[in-house]
Length: 256
Length: 251
Image (tube, rainbow over all chains, first blue to last red; front, side, top):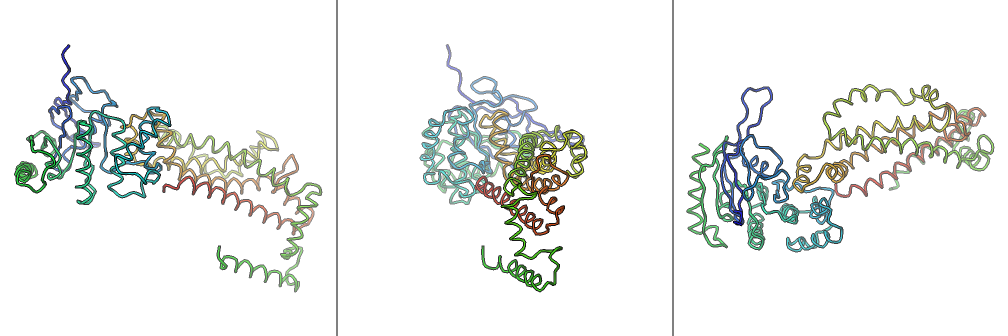
């Protein structure tokens, strides 16, 4: 038997939102096709409001596409598949749950018994440098910590594909840089597939194997970049700068 | 509690006592504080009517409130969660509730007596009506105040409808539910005393007690009874507040 090809594929994904009281629908995604190889770190950049979030929401099963499909390893992705995890921009932590309880939420829903889920959650607490904050509520945590809790809450479910919607968008640049390095460290150990939406080109260049540039609405794939630089990368090094210049050039043509 | 909190009440009591001692206030209209204390002692040891002691009046009243209130909370919280969750259910049921809600609970007394007769069932029904709507409405608004993104976050963790209900909507609505429970018990307690004016079968109840004290011309016992009613209402509220602040530590 042939090994199935391990990848996440979009085939002609389109999305239109009907607008109430207006004849014309909002056309958000326009026949997006792309293959993400298993274990790749792929970033999506594009003009703001272009539909990057909608794309992630479709993959996560929170939204239905109007046409086209998403395949995982060559098969139709079912809604609510355990293979997919999503990290939200605004953390979306449950405010009534402590750090530990937030991270435990997924296993708890799945029905993992108390002892087991507690010990797994504690491993994640350690891995995400959250020790000492297990019993704090989200309001008591800094932005960077909240996002670490949110990522841990998603990763504890061991998704094959991790979707991240501008996860570091609301953090200051110091915290953001730290978290980028932290995320790379985790990813290099686990080799999940990561699909990372950002409006920050520096971030995309620093993190990704590939960058997809989307057009303004309705979003199409304008250009893709392959980044083969060794990690850890030098953010301000010449090679990073060259790629960044190129991505920004493509992007600025789109926002004209 | 600081000194200032007691200063004004103390002053009022002193002046009141002074006026009474100088016989500027007729004691058959407004007994002096010291007479009220003696009246309180009579409620405790003699009883109104004689033999029916204060602690039994309190127990019967609490029992009626607890019954009506428990049924109200038991129905209003799940129903409020459902109505907050389902826009269709909210739309279809709202008009019915909007018509029934403005009817004062006490206006139900005649029909309650017709349906349930005089006794615990009638009283509990009146309490139920007083407490039900505040709890229901606050539960609904509690659910509506939950950020939709939290429901989505639960969905991405593969939550089923049951999980969304128990692990997102219910805990998220708890602060608002507590507001409703506090308003509900307040109204329930006020309503109870009035409901007991109309008569109780068992011969016990704080409302019944102070009406009986009026019949036998004991204003000191009426006022002592009123104070007891107020203090119990306050204690219930303090109890709920304590439970509330424990339940919403996260806020």
